[in-house]
Image (cartoon, rainbow, N blue to C red; front, top):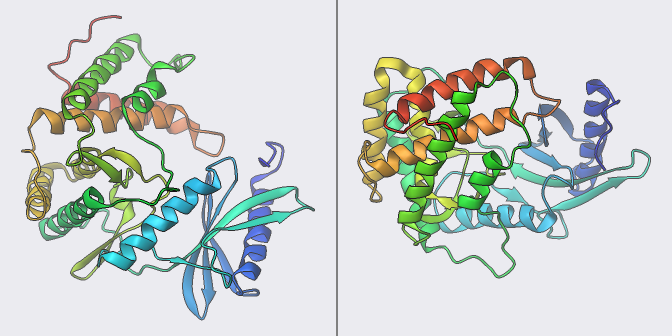
Length: 333
């Protein structure tokens, strides 16, 4: 059941902690130390139980159980059949990778998943070209494996196809007053460009498959010469170029170094798997798709998000879109 809006943030944290404590009992880890790391649509806890672990709690309305189980199956397959560093799910004593927790006194239910801790560090400002090359090679290997992966019959993940992408934008009941009408036209024109690229690529196996769908730099961890990728919660069927261009866009925060980082990433990916040139129309189209996706995400922030920053972040993203989509007509619709 959804936590009522009248409950304070502190009370929400206490509820999530009690649910996490109950989940630890299901995993045979009752009494282990818990530390809340993140709370948004899901809650993420660090668990110290002899070894360091991560527990994630899902409200049932977030994702149905079969969808979460499929994510866990995908991660278990990656760990079992590749040497890619990714979160490793841990089963409960009875073999379940996903545990249902219900506390009648709180009238709350959660799905709990437990993972081994992945060591490493983020490099938000200290990324080198060698690092960027490792990121590219990692994504190339992930996509190469996904291309030949044959999921079980009960595997369920959503599809980030044309209907899902366009629906997010076109079905909005209204636009915020601070978003200028010319920007609406710009985004609709951008959507048309994405539709063209998707239509040309289709869903052939070298273009479409299981993707991470959130390849921001904050989801990569560096371990000396190795790279790990975390947070597969929104993994889905989609275009491999969506993953690639999401990371490429992240390099823009590095200013003058962005071009060199992008080139290193491109070389790393192409050492494993084919990839169009950085200025290819498909690459531009999927960069545009990523920017539009970020804009829609900001516009759909819920009450837990800092809404005051929305206009500023959307303005920055729209300017980024304008630069990417320079040839696109911004005619009124």
